[in-house]
Image 1 (cartoon, rainbow over the protein chains, first blue to last red):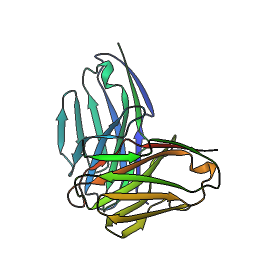
Image 2: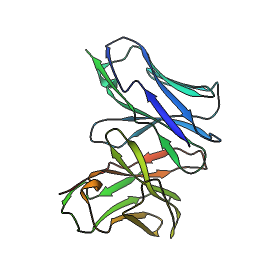
Image 3: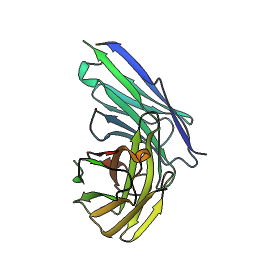
Image 4: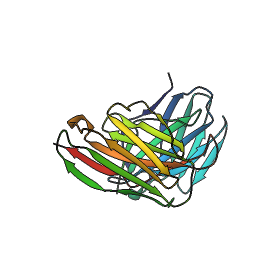
Length: 108
Length: 113
């Protein structure tokens, strides 16, 4: 059965304290691994797509990486505005399997 | 902004009543999806559509039906709402091919009393 697991469930960081979020996946024939940001009361906002192991993508303080078993979202020198829930999802076909997310809180 | 709107944004209804949620897109994407999001479960697929009048079930489809008579509209119907269907419902479109990104609407918060 296809599955996506995220850890930790919640993370509190001080402003400027870098860290990483983990997304472990078992998705048959993975064709894409996606990261989203979700703010309270809003829909998920697309961040990155990774297609193959070894691929990396960056956007501001965020960098996503992919291996054959997991993906990491690295947050460098976070700011309070980076506080949100971060979701990852994998797809092997036209269906997407989502993890339950990591709730990130960045303290000023 | 992928041009996705959902209506209504909030709804309170009573057990046993029918409810229809609407998703509207402006960019002619072929694939559309309905998810529900509950604490501890993440986003779970209810139904999806791969074209006008072409739909299929997701992992939590019991108690829900969908219809797509036009490319731009995807309707989700709860035939007889139950309290277990209290949730936040998100519509999404998919761009590109099989590995295309999904973009989400703003969500509908549904409460069934």
